[in-house]
Length: 138
Image (cartoon, rainbow, N blue to C red; front, top):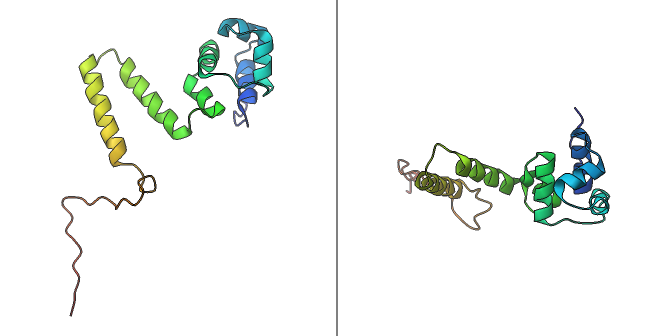
């Protein structure tokens, strides 16, 4: 399988289209965009909106978040969070209240585990079981 480590959105879209064995015209029709517009996106001449990216992702049967990352709309960390939320919200075995509670717990854990670099000047958390270090002053 070919490497998907491509430098920009247009190249990435072209690679995805080729792997799906779709012509430019077929993908444009499936996504509801014009053939020339899609060609301009693939050549890096146009930057599509999030809505157009979502249409293209659906036509290619890939995650829209993947295209958002390639387009610079989301960064990689945001993508993981968006995908996790989508999985929770799509789970048919949970009712709406359970989904909301689970998302609140997820948010609280993410805040608790946020890297120290993201919290400006925040001290490292201390476990309740930890005792303060003993100092010997003579």
